[in-house]
Picture 1 (cartoon, rainbow, N blue to C red):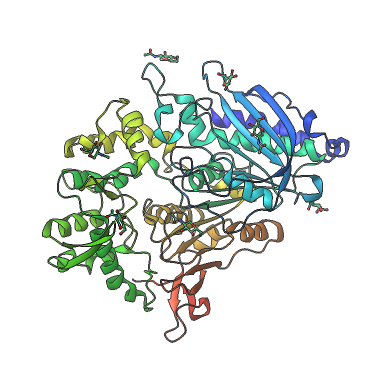
Picture 2 (cartoon, rainbow, N blue to C red; picture 1 turned 90 degrees about the horizontal axis):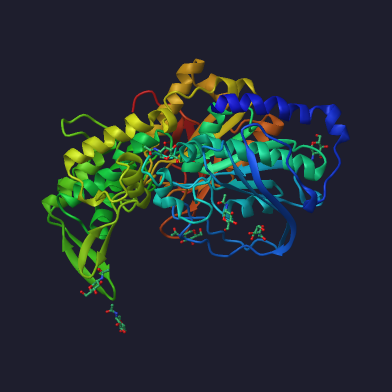
Length: 552
Ligand SMILES: *[C@@H]1O[C@H](CO)[C@@H](O)[C@H](O)[C@H]1NC(C)=O
Ligand SMILES: *[C@@H]1O[C@H](CO)[C@@H](O)[C@H](O)[C@H]1NC(C)=O
Ligand SMILES: *[C@@H]1O[C@H](CO)[C@@H](O)[C@H](O)[C@H]1NC(C)=O
Ligand SMILES: *[C@@H]1O[C@H](CO)[C@@H](O)[C@H](O)[C@H]1NC(C)=O
Ligand SMILES: *[C@@H]1O[C@H](CO)[C@@H](O)[C@H](O)[C@H]1NC(C)=O
Ligand SMILES: *[C@@H]1O[C@H](CO)[C@@H](O)[C@H](O)[C@H]1NC(C)=O
Ligand SMILES: *[C@@H]1O[C@H](CO)[C@@H](O)[C@H](O)[C@H]1NC(C)=O
C-alpha cells in the first residue's frame, strides 16, 4: 500500500524537479503557496503567513517532550519565517486528520536544504522544539503529528489514538505512526520548499531520536528516495519487542519489592565500578558494547546489608539493602523472559539509569512504581485493545500474553525484521545512526543486531559503511543525558558525508564528568570500539583509538 503510494508520487515529484521545469519555477509569496493534487492525499486546509521576530519558548513544554531533553543552552535569535500549516487526510475510510507544520526561512537565510523532524514515544512529531533548532541553522523544516493528536484533542503519548471509538485498531493512524506521516511530510515539505524559493532544496534530510530514530530507519527502508541523509539516534526499532523490556522491571517490582530510587542508583554505581575497568580505562564509563561479560562479573548480592543514604526532603534517610533488592536487580539485568524461561528481548544496558524502566517515587511515605509512561498506553490500547485494562495489576501469565501479542500483532507494521536498505543505498542515501551505551530505555543491542543484519545483507562492515554507520556512545543515556560524552553535531557530520562525500570516520562527542570537567571522545563506527592507549588523560579523545576487538 505505502509502496504503491510512493510509486505514484515519485514520478510526479521528479517531473517537478526536472531541469526544464526548474527553470520555469519562480519564487512564490508566502501567502500564495498552494499544493497540487497528490495521489493518496486529500488536503483539507493550507494556511501560510509570514512570522517575524519569533521567540521560541525558552523552556520546553515537558508534557509534550517527555522523552528527550531538548533544553538548549543558548537563546535562539529572533526568527523570521514563512509559517505553513496543512491539514490533510488519506482515503475517506481513514478519517484521519494530519497536522503538518512547515517553517521556511527567508531566501537570504536559507541554507538550501530541507529537514524533516521526527517524534518520540507514541508521538509522530514534536512542536516546536526540533523545528526551532533546524530553522536556526537555516533549514526549511517541518514536523507532523501524524494525526495522532486527533485534531489536537488528545496527548498522543496516551496511545488512545490507536483505537477507534468502536474498539477496533485504527489502522490509518497506525500506518501514519509507522511510516506514512514522515513520507507525507517529505513529499509536501519538498514541494512547498521548491515553490516558495522558486527552486528545489539542494538536499533533504531527516533527523530524529527514539521514535524519531525509528522513523528514520523506516524512511530509509520503505521510502528510499525521500531523503539524501538521515540522522537516527537511539532508534525505537523492534518496537513490538521493546514492550517486554520496558515493562519487565515494573512487573517484577509489583510482585516483589519496590526499592527507593537511591537504592537502585547504588546498584548502578556498583555495576559501573565493576564493569568500567573491563575496557582498560578507569573513566567511569563502560565502553564495551557486550554487556554479558560485565553483568556476569557483577554480583548484586554483594551489596546486601550495606547502607544507602537517601535524601528525603531535608533529611537523609539510611536504607539497608536487602536480598530482595539484589534479586530484583539481578533479574532486571538478566532481561525479560517468559514464564518458561525463554528470553523475550535484550535487557536494559548495564550502567544505564534505573529511572528509565524501573522508576519509583515516594508518595505519601510509601514507594510506588513509576513505569515509563507510554508503555501503559501501549499495553492498554495496542495490545489488549481495552482502555480500562489494569496494566499495573498484570500477573506473570498476563505479561507472557501481552509480550507475545505485542510481537504477533505489530511485527509486520512496526517491527524492523523485514526491512532492507538496498534501495536506499542504490539511491545514494546515507544514514548516520548513534546509540548511547547507557540508554535507560532502548537496549543498544537491538540496534547493533540491526546493523549486524545489514552487514550480512551487503557483505561485511565495509560494504555497510558505504551508506550506513552506527556510532555507540559510552555512558550516554537515551538520546542524551547520562555520564558520557554525547555526539556534538551528528547532522553536520552527515551533511559533509552527503554533500562533500566525506564519510564520518569518527563522531565528535563531548560532555562533563562528575567534577564538571570537560570530557571528549571521537566515537567509533561499529564494529570498532574505543580502546584506551594506557597512559593518556582519560578525559581526552586523543587518549583513545578505534579498534575492532575480535573477542571480548
Ligand atoms: C537538560 O539539559 C540541560 C542543558 O544541557 C541541563 O542543564 C538539564 O539539567 C537537563 N535536564 C535533565 C532533566 O536532564
Ligand atoms: C503558525 O500558524 C499556525 C496556524 O495559523 C498557528 O497556529 C501557529 O501559532 C503559527 N506559528 C507561529 C510560530 O507563529
Ligand atoms: C544549492 O546548490 C547550488 C549548486 O551547487 C549552489 O549554487 C547554491 O548556492 C546552493 N544553494 C544554497 C542556498 O546554498
Ligand atoms: C479540527 O478542529 C478544528 C477546530 O479546532 C475544526 O475547525 C476542524 O473542522 C476540525 N477538523 C476535522 C477534520 O475534524
Ligand atoms: C469500527 O469502525 C470502523 C471505522 O468507523 C469501521 O470501519 C469498522 O467496520 C467498525 N468495526 C466494527 C467491528 O464495528
Ligand atoms: C525543610 O526545612 C525548612 C526550613 O528548615 C522547613 O520550612 C520545611 O518545612 C522542611 N521541609 C520538609 C519536607 O521537612
Ligand atoms: C496522600 O494522602 C492524603 C491523605 O491521606 C490524600 O488526601 C492524598 O490524596 C494522598 N496523595 C497521593 C498522591 O496519594
